[in-house]
Image (tube, rainbow, N blue to C red; front, side, top):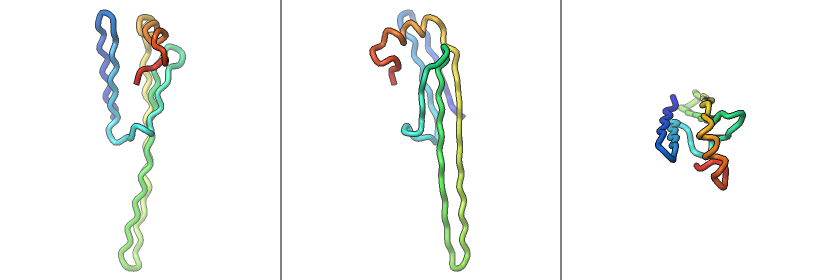
Length: 86
């Protein structure tokens, strides 16, 4: 389950997001329609062979989280050179 903290200071807004069990490479962060959207995915494959017995399992997880952004935050993002500071 993702953990998202939002801290609003006078001139800055910080958003800290933790996605336990997901690698940074499997996160997709974007802004669309005044929403911060974070998508995460993972796929783990397990194989175990003992003699003639084969155990195989695939576990896939997807998480989608969106956060409605205030006008103040959208103004800060639009002033940042890259649009999103990660």
